[in-house]
Image 1 (cartoon, rainbow, N blue to C red):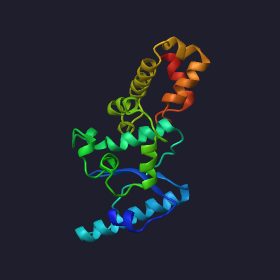
Image 2: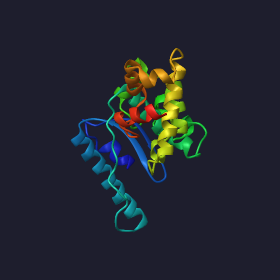
Image 3: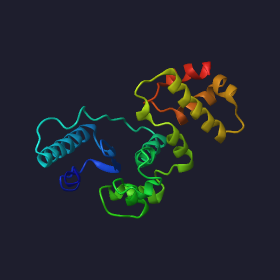
Amino acid sequence: MFQFLQEKEVPTVEIFAYCIMSNHMHLLLRGPLKDISEYMKGIQTSYALYYNRKLERNGHVFQNRFKSFPVESEEYLWQCFYYIHLNPVKAKITEDMKRYQYSSAQEYLYEKKGLIQEKARSYMKEGQMFYPAERVIPQLEEVYIEDLSEETTQQKDRILRKWIEIYLEEHKELCLWDLQNLPKNRNDFAATMLDPRVMSRKELFHRLDKF
């Protein structure tokens, strides 16, 4: 898999972050959707051939097609960025994401050359994609989207409660009533905190009104 990523490059697809775990991996990619689909197909095929050859086996290696989500805001970009790098911490493999050698965290922090694009590194340095970690990380440490195997009401309410706590902590002049009743604050809350993988905008407002 590493060999495919390094040698069989697709110029239009750029790696901005990655984390390889024992039974899955996460990639933050930028590029045309068609090219990304071909890119992932190449990775899966290359690794499946390597894995089967190494273990002298046949058959499928990956259970399902890869899942992908579009990144459409700067905040969501940083949520994905930290979510990927915090995976080993969440899995209790390490207490510090900087110590995990199979992710891009060390490439960013120690400027090691690896899989990420130099363009991504320069964006980080120049602050073109800057978003404060102290805002994003607390949200991800307690609520990981992949844990939502069943989207129960209790789980979504827990996530919404966390969003509200974070938002009101940063807007101390506001209260829950403002988020429920004032359109300007409602819209800003949704634009700032909503993760479309968890619930839709319409569902967010519906749950907020009943909170």
